[in-house]
Image (cartoon, rainbow, N blue to C red; front, side, top):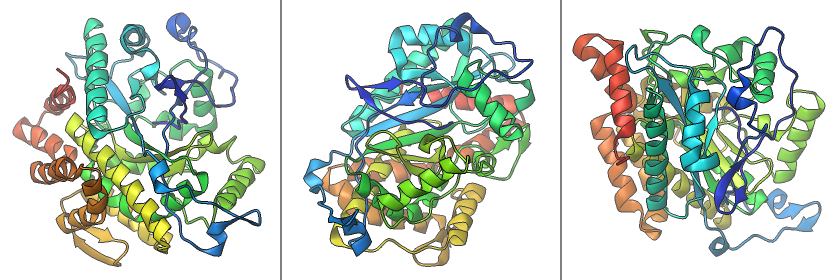
Length: 440
């Protein structure tokens, strides 16, 4: 998914365009029958995020004044989830540029909780702000179900996977909105090949300094979460041998990747100012890290995973993400330092997770060693267990994780579907079937 910022309107996620408008590209013929009616608005969600921070002098002083930390009881760690879906032709199983037809029907049911994306063969949903894991499940089931229903009215299907098994980016039509036309102009070939689908989880943190410190501490756990949710093995009709090839496509963008450690919110803000001054980005919403603070609202956004096949897997990712934020926030409150991990090691850990998923070793960044994937996932659960137990989420989330490990990732299940008859169309059928599971 391309960058999103979040706010709240009546408890629902409001959408508007937070980007600087761009002029149209020469030669583009917009299909304005529907999109001409859309205000240039973009996804905004209000999600309070709790953060991690280390009790160093740099953390406790802001502009020379003692910073007062918000008590942990004040943070609700609310959750919001965004998912990007594929629009599928039911006969050919190819991607189908039908967003302009499907969106009006979907919006009649869910309003602005459904949005267009870069290509007309993509569509995006965003849950309202959720207080609990059951709320997340209910909203995902509702939104997936309504989008599937709208697509069926158009004679199309909906699929949730990080890449399409065989459709080519050259055959896709750009969504005719100024925002997407501008992205295509600015990023050229990178944007043309950006036919990928992600899942973004937002956790509410009101304390902006805390959000930076949570980000500092969460970085070392992103790779195992990517491995658990890997769901993009095929690209342009080829088995890439990766579990998450989407990660490799997204890695090429200039502001993507794992962020470095920041001593304070002030240091982060200074970096954004410098990036804007050097014309590297127009504003903070164009920083596309695997985890980033919202430029406008009290949110921390985790963007590292592929969109998941099933609702169960999305609930798993959301539950792990909130527990990670809580755990890292509490580390900061206890004065525990963030792991000073080398960027090269973090990059290697992420690549290993994208390459193998759960089928080989993963990198324990804290311990500086390679460990079996299952052991690394258990290490993650051990770290998150106090938070999950305190909030009565341990049984559900740990069960979903262990079931996922036993069943195999979305990537491994896609490969098994292909191996049965050597047909990529069968892979698409599996994706469509699992996407709908639990919606009715």
